Length: 378
Ligand SMILES: Nc1ncnc2c1ncn2[C@@H]1O[C@H](COP(=O)(O)OP(=O)(O)OP(=O)(O)O)[C@@H](O)[C@H]1O
Ligand SMILES: [Mg+2]
Image (tube, rainbow, N blue to C red):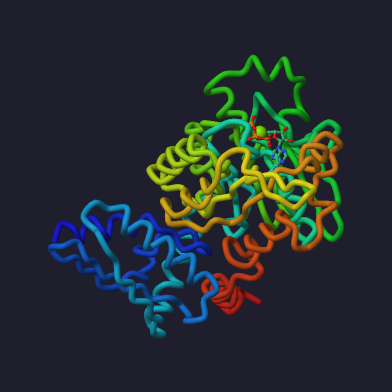
């Protein structure tokens, strides 16, 4: 009995990705059983069977359930709500939406991806910059926050320079257009000179990160990417409090040492209820002009980490001089990439599978919209 209650409590931490409320509180979780061997069954009812977020909800439920020591295996029974349950869910969703004071100008439906690693120098900033540009080239408006207060680099990597100005009491991120989309960037590099940033410590840094989110105009963005410094427990917690929809993408090299540190980072994320969405292996090897592949930093670290965490391996990015050169010139390497290049492929994976843009989301948010319209006064 206690195990069932523990499992229900754990599942109440899983949020509906569109409504931002607990799937238990929304009434989506039905029967739960746990037998003496730890085999659990959980019934989850979705608003429609073709819910595009089904895979994400399934993944989050599975991850939450199996993180309990009392649960060894899980049978997940996915169903569809009947009309009265749907009406009750909508009522609860509206109450939650009204109660949740918006902490930021970033709508809950906007996917927020934090790029983390635990270890320094593995390519977080390079992945953030190139992924942001790849998403922009797909026609999206991408907010980028350089949360690396001491070691900011995104303004250089993205070729965005200038001085941030305030408008209506809010900082205005600087913008650059890329093909059909655009990037909006805030970074300490656009506010202070390097020596000044280096004097900042601990709490002030967390406060700066919070300000970059709360006191900035991030309206009109489809994606929000956050580049982080290595080993960022406190910053991750600050970010997760302000942006509960945030998920983490872990960057690692194929080396065992990097993989172990990244695993610790994932462990911390889980304890703070931050979802780990997938792993990117960077510096996966060097392709010689003769066509041979050399594994300079070992092999298989990304795949092992993704298997260990039960999350997808999203990309394996080879060592390439164009990545370093693109960073120096402010023209990210992805700009010279073909459509099947590593960063373009990573962006497509995010768009279709890992965090579809909110316009492509369907079930509950669209129903809620329709409901709001139907009850709105003329
Ligand atoms: N796939 C790659 N091929 C070649 N060079 C790379 C690749 N990825 C990153 N680099 C280079 O490695 C260095 C470190 O990369 P980057 O700054 O992106 O790492 P980081 O994890 O953000 O580092 P830090 O922890 O210091 O913030 C940079 O000089 C970058 O140009
Ligand atoms: Mg960096």
